[in-house]
Image (cartoon, rainbow, N blue to C red):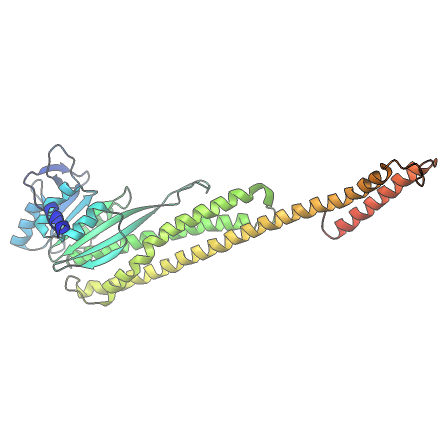
Length: 375
């Protein structure tokens, strides 16, 4: 119970508000302390599918008063708010303390949670990091988070990470008043669709990286002893990045299925149909990512097998040369024993005959081993 009391203290509204205009918009940001930059990047009221023009800076509290008076809904976007910055908004909209804690702390698993008057949804955003060549230290995917609070007359997004800006998405929705007129659930669908479209784009880019590594591993002209260690490190790094991708995609499938199949009071029935398409796209991406993981396992095993084969070939060559060298070693060992009565020891042609026989035996062993592929 003490934990709940602490969380309720977090969402207690504050009285001080400062404003900062977000470049490229007509709305302003809000925060409690004028000395602290605001976490709000956009705040607007939407009515009948259109953004209501604001005569001046519009705070979340003023926007909500307009909605309660004239109807419509308010859409507030925040970027990495602190507890103090989010407290006033959370208190104004009656957000659940547990959801507020998750939204502020971030590093959450994709999920959908239902509270009395709102839905709390967590999305993991994925951004592909461009690189000239994949190395053992390359960062392939970069992750962020978007938390969404969906209510009857409000929609709040809390974004974490440098990627995943929703400004272009907001403008796109404003150009489609018929869809935006459906209310906050239309915005939730648009964000889900936007996130999953990002997954699809990243999946195509990761596929190219995997194809590149696969080609190098199975290239006929590849010299195993030169690049074997680098290849293994690159494959392992790519596998780690794919695992990060999978952690974003796999947990989101169940929430999308719930939004598309189970009737919810805050989701417009017409919008619910669109969630089916998002869930279908997400399922295909999940299959791709699972396939990437299995394929990288196979590539890594094949690379390790090639390294083992290369080591075996080296050992066979070493063994073959040791067998050849054993012949003159044995002969020299015999004639190095210094016995007085030894055959050919005092014979005029003893030395060239012994050397000739030794060379012939060595040559015969060499030809036999080479014919059998040992050399």
